[in-house]
Length: 240
Image 1 (tube, rainbow, N blue to C red):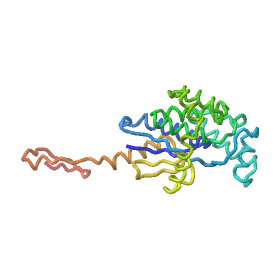
Image 2: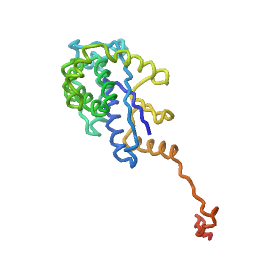
Image 3: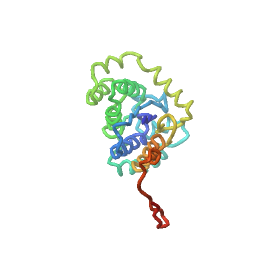
C-alpha cells in the first residue's frame, strides 16, 4: 500500500496528522507493506522569514490582513489542545515564523534517502515545540544529522537552488489533484482523505483500503470432489 502525505511544515494540523498516522500504522498488521511518501504542498510560498514578528502577527499578515492576530490566537487554542491530547506541545508564543521552502527542500532530499519520516518528526518538533529558526541553514543541517541524514551534504545542498523548482512543481501537482489545504492523504492513488484524523480513523481507512485492494478469494474444493463439510446460518439451520 502507498500513502502519500501532502503537507507543509508551517501547518500545525500536519504535525498532529503525522503523529496520528504513525500510531495507526503501528497498529496495522501489514505495516511492513506500507510505503509512506511525503510530498510538499507549500501553503504560502512568499511568506517572509526573520521578520522579528510573533506568530500571531505574522500569520495574520501572510493571510493578507483578512484576520486579526487575536483571531489567530483564539483559533489555535483548539489546535493546541488537540496536539496536547496526542502528546504534542505547541509553543506558539515563542515560535519563530519562517518561510518553509528550505525545510521542504530537505524533505524532498530526505524522501530520496529513505529518511523522510524521521525528518518530518524532527522539523515539526523544532518549529512548533523548540522554537528553532527553520530558515537557518545551519539549524536545518543539524536537524538533518539528527534525522539520519548527512548534515554536511544537506548544508551543501541548501547553498544551491537544488529542489527549489521541485517544491513549486509539487505544489502545482497537488493543486491539479484538487488539493487546496493540508494535510491531505492519498491512498494507492485512488482514495483521498482531506484534513487531520484520529489514529483510530486513520486505521479504519487503512484497513478499508487494504481489504478493497486485497479481497478474500474463495476456494471451492468441491470442484475436485474433495468437498466435505457444512455451514450453519444465522437462522440456526446447519446445512451439511
